[in-house]
Length: 450
Image (spheres, rainbow, N blue to C red):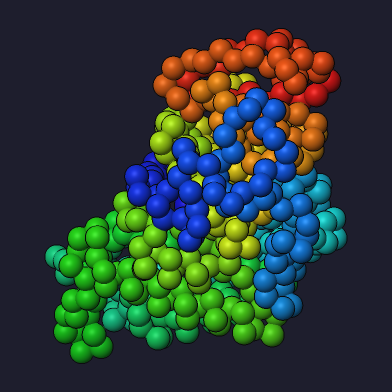
């Protein structure tokens, strides 16, 4: 993820094993939890889904301050909570701060304005995991040193593909990739970014492109004597690559937490085709303080997730929150957004949102601008229960409305009668909703009590 650059594509491969990848005690989407007690009996007589404990309504259920000295996470229980992805084009950060819980990649020049306007906002400084990103105050603005510079200054830091000549560049970018097992590289990252971020008053480091697959076919590096050192196979599925990612996360998280002004580690994390319940993936997640997912409910803007992937995402978001870690969902569109697109994202989010989940919507790679939409201010209240299934769709009841999602491949007509018959509803755009409602394939409706 880089600000204001186009053409990026990173596969979003949610494994079919994802449901099995949940923490111990999770159930499949089609099996009622054995020991669950829903907050109330689902209105439609449907089957409660998703978690093995009752919905938590108490602040004590969530550790909002995971590290001593770090600003607590904001409770997302009420209504819709949003965050900002980069802020390069935000002209009035003080005004924007009032609408957001978190900024992924806040510029140093904006920190004081955010703080003055919203003392509770969580601010993160952007650091890609293993490439040169320029200087603290000029990140991602063309201030990265080129390959010739690093060959002269630190040739043993450069990570190459198996041809031993081509750097293992990420995507189409020319940021020089580094061997993150080199202690000097880690020390340089700490000196160049982390210590400065801590001193500047940030709450977290936004670590980009934490990829558990070796997508760019990294293979090795040269030592200080110019001898080739092969570390990886160059294949996508590489155990040594995974172990090195885990080692970096483990070391960095400990270092962040130990600072005089501690920082959290929030990662744009991708496990790709690997199983989420594998030991290595769980180890990696154990050393994250929060997760950002760039694919969201729109697969990088390519399509609305089909039912299997949508259910898997529901469980993933829920599982991370139950580890007392926030989940930040980016949702992009490669076309002009329609009302039904906005409802798809917001409805899906409201299905899995508990106390630690926030949403972001933009055009494809349209990061850096204040993209607030009126629907972020919808007053739907707090959840009355967890997601349940009835009439071949998925429901969730809120104190001031109802959310219905049809992730299937066929349209479904549902009835809102009994016990909803005495209520009338509006959609997020102010249009009245009748007692019978047809949901097209891969769509959602948010019903606001009127």
